[in-house]
Structure formats: structure tokens, C-alpha cells
Length: 298
Image (cartoon, rainbow, N blue to C red; front, side):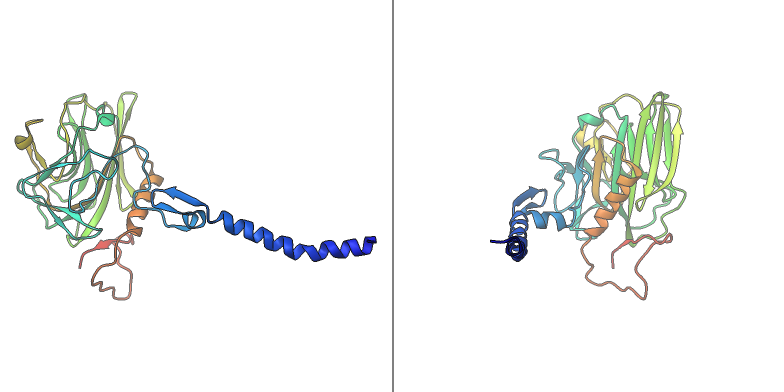
């Protein structure tokens, strides 16, 4: 074969080689891949939406209120209910509902946060009504650290310091409506003799303050959701601050989440909100006073 014919032969072979290459790529995309969402081929794994709660590092407890008080973050670690804790089909696939009288959920003592120096508490809250003058419990440990709704209907993060004083960081904005869920995150980070509290609302930082004291030593009190009913469980001898309304997607981290991680968490939750049965939108997408998308119940 002369050089001219050899050149023509090689050019004629190019389409065949290209087709073979495409076949190899297609086969590779069918390789089974296993992750949090199960087993699919690798092409699907690359395009599947992220599952809810995509921040597993340091996640000790994830209580979703889907008909039980199980811990979705790990086997075991489920909560114990006291009083009239019920489950409602609001917002996500379900939520805890508390009666404001005695309903509460006790969580097991989570050993990685026993020192209390790095803690993140996250929850969606839906008060049934204004209860001005009454402090209400969202999630936390009595005498240690807690995310609460203050008597002025403002979400706050607080901790008990080694100086034997309570230190609280409150949002400046009062919850103005009781027909939707609000997402709040409280972060505690302590080192070098001082403690910083950071409060986030709807994925954005709203307040931050540093206090010249470390958190107090672990007092053995367990974490609670929706109130504290220690007279029923007998672990810490305190009862009160019962929340009236729904609380959903409660997460407890044994570390301090960054602002970008909290925004990711907020966005992931919003992406997995099921559509409402009836949604009267008018001409704009539902949003709060700052223009953030909100989770409505109608």
C-alpha cells in the first residue's frame, strides 16, 4: 500500500474509533454507584439532587417529626416524649406539635457536646400564636445552652457561663406572623476564655456577640425539644418553658457550623419542601420582609 492509500485508510478509520470511544463512555456511566440515596449508575449519581441534610460531619441528632422522635442522623439516639406531643402534616413530611402545657421531648445525653464548647442548634419553628411575656423552649439543655423564643417573641441563643451568669443573644426582630415556619440556627463557639454566640435567621447571620467567659461545666442535664419536663424524667429537676406550636427538622451538631454551611443547610431544606395543597400566590413568590423565600401553611 502506497503512502497515499495508507493516509486515506487512517482517515476512514476515524469515525469507527469515535463510535468505539462513545461506547466506552456510555458503559462507564452505567457503573453502579452507592451513596446516601441508594444505588444508581454513576451518570445518575452526578445529576441527582442533593438529599436533605447534606452536612453530616458532626451531626449528632436530627429529629424530623415524621410520626416519631427517632434520630435520623444515626441508629439509636431517639427521643422520649412527655405530655401531649403530637405530629402534624405541616411544612415538610411532618412536624412535632407541642401544646404549651407539658409536651416536650427528651434527647439522650450526646457525649461529644458534653463540654459544650462547640455547639450548633438548628430548627424550623411555627408558633401557634403570640405568647408575649412567656419564654418558650425550642431546643437545648437546661442550665447549659439553648435556642429559645423570648417573652418578646424574638428567637435567641443563650448559654450558662463559668461566671455563673446567663448570657443571651437575641434577634432584634420580633416574629410578626404566626402563619408560617421560621428557620433559626444558634452557634456557640468557645476558646481561650471567651464564648461567641452567632444567630442565623433564614440562612443569614442576624446577630453575633462575644462574652468574656467560657461555658459552665457539664451539669448532666439532657437536651430537650419544645420544653423541659424534668419532673417527669428526673434527670435535672427543672420543668417549664413549654412551646405552643410546631417545631420541625431539629438538628444538633457537636461543632460550630460556618455561615456558608448554614446557608447550604437552609437551601437544602427549602429544596425538599413538598408543594402545598393550596397556595395562593398572587403575583409574587411568597417571601418575608427581607425578600427571603418562606415556608407557608395555608
